[in-house]
Amino acid sequence: MTNFRADDLDEDLTSLRGDCARMAPHWTPPEHAATRPVPPSLIHGVRVPARSARLLDAMSDYGD
Image 1 (cartoon, rainbow, N blue to C red):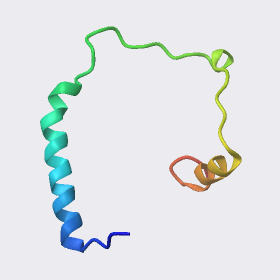
Image 2: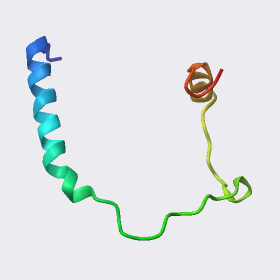
Image 3: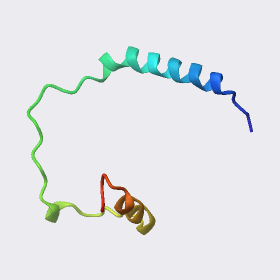
Image 4: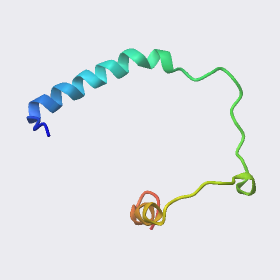
């Protein structure tokens, strides 16, 4: 396992941010009408593990 120094991580984060900034123009959304909401009755096959559901439920942004 590699032990990174804190300044190494900061430099890597700066590099990652620069890469993202250069790629952002390539990720523009398509020019079409906004999507419509799908009724819950049409959503099938989505499974959330109980552990993940409990984790989200415990987060104040999603649960509580």
